[in-house]
Length: 87
Image (cartoon, rainbow, N blue to C red; front, side, top):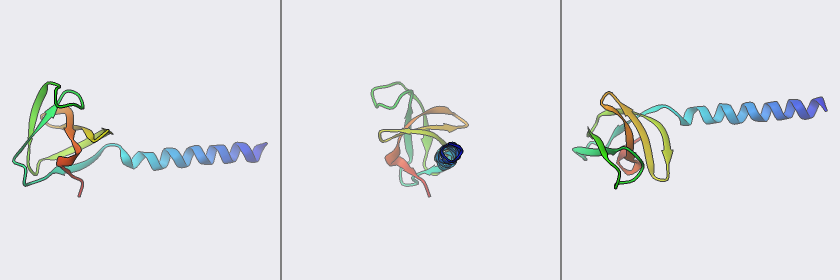
């Protein structure tokens, strides 16, 4: 019984530890794109909330089906992942 509990706790710890690096990291918008629109939701038919410039640093908060919810000094919104250089 104790082995099962210990194994379960180890598995939960491993899952939690491996999930942490996927959230809240910085990236840069591709330099060759001068301006990229950021939207209020992960669709292009949502309201445009602001624009980021090529090379601007941003933080990726989460991802969803080809989109990333980002944070910059200008605000928070959704950006198509194709425009993000994660290097």
